[in-house]
Length: 532
Image 1 (cartoon, one colour):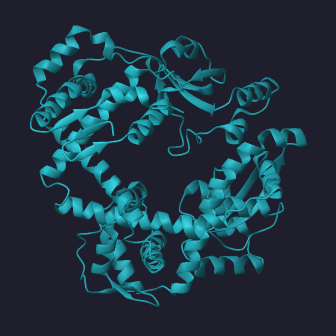
Image 2: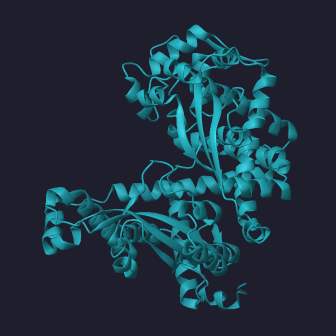
Image 3: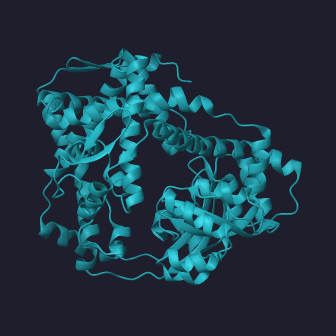
């Protein structure tokens, strides 16, 4: 025991865990006694804030009860996947060899989209009866480019399409047409038009990349198995929708939205739609859900998940997901994990993390910054709020020097930067979420700023060592710098001033709590810790 905060204690294990997090963030630096004292002091401050949250009754109020219920549900679902899905992930050498070839192959394909299995099957039958693929694409797509191109998605490689779309396309011979493939957005019928592969793939190169391939495929195979597992549960539940209620619900959720707005909608309000809550929405082998039942179950999903409801297909999948979740939770309860000491401890720890965040947000909300102080801080040195030159960067980040050396050799011999990133980088494609490479300010890179600023579009820099990682950067675009007015920079000025005052404000709040608390910290015990 290293500290006592009221009735709470801080253990050596907590300090060592915090040290490990610290080293992961800043690098494996030499540990000093001063660092350990600072980390311990930080943990004590957090314990004071958590204890204060409990004292105020925040741990038992309505918001906490709702959060605890969500955390209990998430803990059971995590346990379910560890128990019933993760053990199914087995990876053979042959799989890794096929994946290696896939990483070195680009596929050109086109597809027909359908929002339901019935429509997809009808389209597939038309193709089997001799219908023209491009002609059908001109009727099923609203997007002018997809209509004009016959549903072409162009060339793609690993991790650029839905996983099941990708699997089907790579498995198809050139010219053949797939049966309907279920994806996250609906159903696709795929025709592969061309494949371009690397003709020189050696066993030595495979062995060099085998470890990276294994890590990549383990995570992605887990995702695929999770989706297949959920689909198997849905099939067993025999889920049936009341189509009239479903259509009215979708229309109510997205009332007055154009098709373009629908694609951009995020986290729509599904809890206050003008509908009869008692209307039957869906039924399965085990129960019947009304609109009201659906809304209650949906409260334990995130705004991001609700934002996924952009079509009738995704609404069906979302509602089916709630029924699948119930089936998983029921199996966890039957297995006896719910309510165990282990489960309760995991939920309690996460709830206290939530309470800490809630206290910190409360402290931050009380921080008042006047307009005059913002203007005065800006006037001291307007240049610090100037827009620095920016560049869009593609990146490859790896953990080992040997891997970085191998990438450098590959780049120097003309290998494709994007292909090497897919094979080696511990981070995903930088443009995966938005379709664009993110722009960074030169100021974000400290001592590397001048080197990066000197890059021309298409040039790369690396490897450079950053926080125990090795990175390569390729310039994909540039923007010049400029001075800004106070009005243009105001939001950044306020963030800066708030950040500067936040620590002082937090310390003031913690000190006020400390005065009415019993705190004992045994810094001398740090010396006896055995650090691995």
